[in-house]
Image 1 (cartoon, helix red, strand yellow):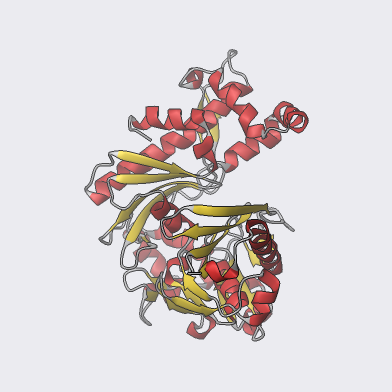
Image 2 (cartoon, rainbow, N blue to C red; image 1 turned 135 degrees about the horizontal axis):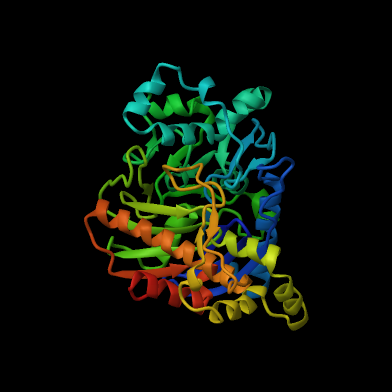
Length: 436
């Protein structure tokens, strides 16, 4: 029997998924395990036990293999994609030294302890100070070095979630260059850690030896160890192949291979992305991301609290739908669809600015707002206004993307939980005036 299947693992923000996929992209079996996104010991914190991610991965892969009944001989390799910018400190034995700092965490480092004072006027004159300030403050390693220096001193490796799971699976401290995103000294152009004189080492100071080695997507990360095989159910010695971050895989999986076809992801964070073959900065000092295709990139404009806003509305204003869903067995989001249909486009003048912290890239401190209230407005209007606000913010991002890429967007592909909503899809098609 020939090996013809890949075990693809997706460690997302709200679920752990594992699938058996063939070379044509057909999914033979899929298992999804809900997970707790994070816990917060203080306001603004978002953390999770690193071991929890591993436990959920093992649970999900074992269930996948047991339910599918597929012979291990058919499995050619395994790969993993994860949520972006969730960081983990481990000691020399690979044991976590503290909870993982999840990408939604809002704690800040003191920029004045990182960058010398004389650089501030220069950055302000170059009109990049807000971006540099934001990136430096939200650099996880900066915060740990300032507030938990003992933890940083004991840190053997500072890993992305992908790197942590790779180590648990292979025993190697190695990661895909496609996962090196955010406030780390990474050079997108070379797909490797930045050169020693790069400004990123000043903004995100850390020892190079604390970072994992990098390989490009599609290259080998190692093999599944005997210990990992026992815990996950995956065959020992199975090749483990580098993928990329979840967004990069989203783009390729939706068929967005050229810049005129944009990928809109309606996930916890809503984004509009384009796959590009040349290096393009949408804003100064804001590089594109590494693609799942080696040597290529993708652009991104994000509404950080995208479909998170739906969850927020559901918890704060959707008690009726939650109770009805509990009785009917439906998802509350399906019942919320009725609210959208009851309100005309434009929400009768109610407008939502969907920035429930943080805001856009160059305005990270922007706040959310809902305005235009009148006596005709109900919670249904509020729900539709939230969705319209998210889509209009994405359209604003599309205009910037078209300008910088020099290529008009002529088609949209949608992914994420929101793509299952007929109302959201119709709203997107109407606002963009494009097929979705």
